[in-house]
Amino acid sequence: MAAVTAGQTAQAAAGSTDGADGALEAAFDAAVAADERIEPRDWMPDAYRASLVRQMAQHAHSEIIGMLPEANWITRAPSLRRKAILMAKVQDEAGHGLYLYSAAETLGTGREELLDKLHAGRQRYSSIFNYPTLTWADVGAIGWLVDGAAITNQVPLCRCSYGPYARAMVRICKEESFHQRQGYELLLALSHGTPAQHEMAQDAVNRWWWPSLMMFGPPDDASSHSAQSMTWKIKRHSNDELRQRFVDICVPQAEVLGLALPDPDLRWNEERGQHDFGAIDWTEFQEVLKGNGPCNEQRLTQRRRAHEEGAWVRDAAAAYAQKHTDSPNADAAKTDVPKTVVPNGEATA
Ligand code: BYC
Image (cartoon, rainbow, N blue to C red; front, side, top):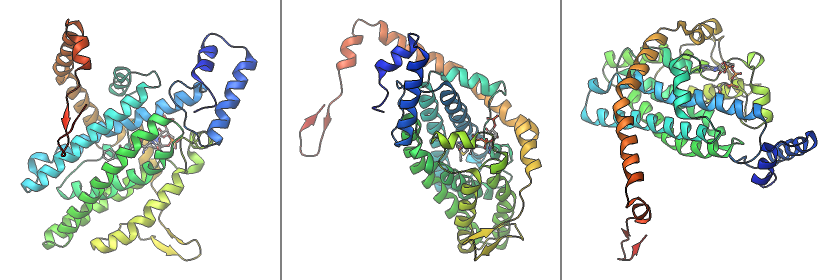
């Protein structure tokens, strides 16, 4: 963002007058209105920073908790090909978590602090990961519906006003597209397989459809953060707008899959040019948010255990980094960039 410089940020930190604060806020508002990106060293309102940390932390936590239900199926994947694909997908989710924790760090909130809050149950992760993965078809339903909903929600986040979050989302969305396709292809194979496989695919879709619609958050009139987040261009669309977009995308895809969406009220509305759909059970959503979903306790217990069991990896990485910082050759090592040989034979740094 050009309008508010690092110098101005320093001035604000040094204790500016109300007038100077007002000028910084006006410059921030103008930058957001002009669709410029806000960068880590730019001045920003405290509430903007806090809201971003809240959303980005929840998003990062969802990525790493989201690894758990699918990872359950790695050992039971029905072929080597399916196992390799699923392992790659689960690894991608870990990577997404890392991009997002790093992006949150640019706002002055460390990964340790965020993980502590997750493990203490003081920060949220997506409601969707509190449902069980009962059969292999659930891996397909998660890819098609859960990753599909995630993409619908996240593509607009590539234009989020906060630069590091927006840039992280570009790569995440590309990878999520691959995830969605793998789920769709898996369900297509099952749906056109034996009657038992078809039934398994239909059962998975029946169980994941409604929770996927809840991923977009509460209805607009109950969404406490939407209005402010949209003014700040953190969010570009409301929860209900994105939910509707997702339903409209899924209906023709379900037809190609040969699977029914479990909603008797789902039908095309000629006048609106969109699908009408049935009422969502918001009581269920609130219960899951309160910690009373089918797997809330199991997910958090597993996550805490994974964190404890990974302590030796963090310790080893820290010891390795320290060894290289202390080494007399540390400075030389930093400038010793390996050379890459390009096909025409030239070596580049
Ligand atoms: N689950 O004012 P609202 C993925 C909370 S995909 C739990 O509308 P906002 C993945 C909300 O935090 C999933 N909590 O909030 C996919 C707030 O509570 P607090 C992750 C929810 O922020 C495949 C309250 O309800 N994606 O990672 O304006 C494989 C009121 O809501 C949920 C993202 O996080 C929910 N579904 O809008 C692996 C995308 N919905 O904080 C991984 C980024 C709402 O006041 N996030 N709440 O206590 C967003 O776009 C927005 O935060 C939301 C909610 C649309 C989710």
